[in-house]
Image: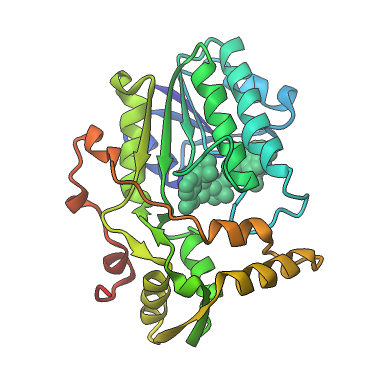
Length: 297
Ligand SMILES: NC(=O)c1ccc[n+]([C@@H]2O[C@H](COP(=O)([O-])OP(=O)(O)OC[C@H]3O[C@@H](n4cnc5c(N)ncnc54)[C@H](OP(=O)(O)O)[C@@H]3O)[C@@H](O)[C@H]2O)c1
């Protein structure tokens, strides 16, 4: 198959490029500044910005499947302001859908995120939710994947947790009780490949979680243990964390703001893990402690 990965040079995209080329697909990665040296041999690269339709349209020609992986990280305040989430996630998806339709692309796979909601409480969650709506309203053969946080080499979730967690004593908002269901990038890639190759997934939206639910405090301890240290969590009341992060958001150049505080209050788990739709038993998935090479908490 000819597969276009919009955002194919990112964390999930690079892993997907490897798996798809190994399976004999012709892969093109589109990004604003793609570097072919960072991608597996045989992957074509195309320069384009999803917020500028004319810059991406030619890349959609002759493609069988498009996977939209374009991202603006929710973990840090965007330098162009919070509205960038709408421009890139919703507006970018709108442009990708239009380019796919104009080029008779058969299938469109949207990488969304667990909790995406057009009326959600952060710019990222709302933009992802509105992008999903556009995908479902399109005439294309679509599928939507909504993973919890993803870990693996080159991913930013673990390094972000390390930043939040200084050695010895870590002041975490709400005592780090917020829950996540981290999934290993290699396991997620298997699911994306199945969605690309198997048309029975058309018209489906899947909530995707990893094999275990971990609190932020658990993840903080695991990541510190992995660096040979340990940490005690010092609970910071949510209200104090809100003030701190809002103040940080007002400081020019500060990477955290009010949206990051709100995200840290939202559990990111699913009771109905749709990975079973791919014939995968959650018990077979890679666990975060095993990936980090440490004991379970
Ligand atoms: N990683 C996670 O934990 C996680 C969890 C849930 C959902 N997701 C979703 O999974 C998808 C992929 O995430 P990821 O972690 O792989 O993201 P990532 O590493 O940040 O990669 C983002 C990709 O998008 C490209 N990009 C950004 N802005 C662009 C623009 N305006 N036009 C064209 N390309 C642009 C980037 O390349 P350039 O900067 O060179 O343009 C890069 O290739 C996203 O939809 C994300 O929301 C990720």
